Amino acid sequence: MLIKKILFVVLFMTILSNSEVSNNLINASSGPPASMIFTEDEFQFQIKSKDIAIKIGNTREEVEQQLGHPVDYYYHTNVYQYKNMRIHYKAGIVDGIMIDDSAIFRKYKTPRGIGFGSTIQEVIGQYGKKGFMDSKKGIVSSITYVMERNKQGNYSVISSFDKFVLEGGYENLMALSMVLDQRGRVSFLMIADYEFAYHPEFRWTETQ
Image 1 (tube, rainbow, N blue to C red):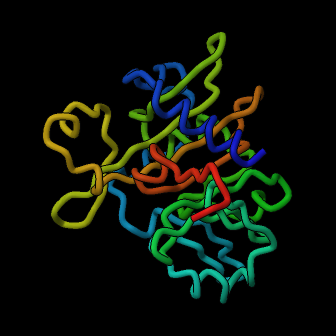
Image 2: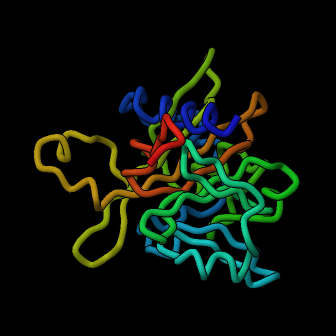
């Protein structure tokens, strides 16, 4: 099941067009516009009331101080299942976080308040209109924001990969990916660096 979900996310991220979210969805967003300048602290899930925050760049020790030891391990994808989420490490550092359990996801939010059940309009209101999206019969089924780090260490959403194809720099990219259900509400969310988002680790045999 986990492998299928990761494959699904990778698939939609690699076949997305450069279309921006439709004006109808943008106009449906309410409230004042959020800042479109992002920091490293954006790439985390948190429960503010319990002072829990799991973020890209955490060490495994930092994660397990908050979540405890993993309850399962998926060898073929090198992903650890914790009570609250699935995490991938590279050299002991978090580079991918996934949540799709509705009971748990209701508790965890991004720093901008997006979590399980958030509407597409709420997502756009917080992260902007430049998300790459996939749709089925006119209904958005997934949306991905790819963000580039600048020299000051801040991030902004990109709308094209042309620059990176020509010049490289993929190591400066982060991805925030969401799958939406038929009601247009978030049912899966992944935060990851570019390498894990686009080239997740697979092991086809049990031998090293």
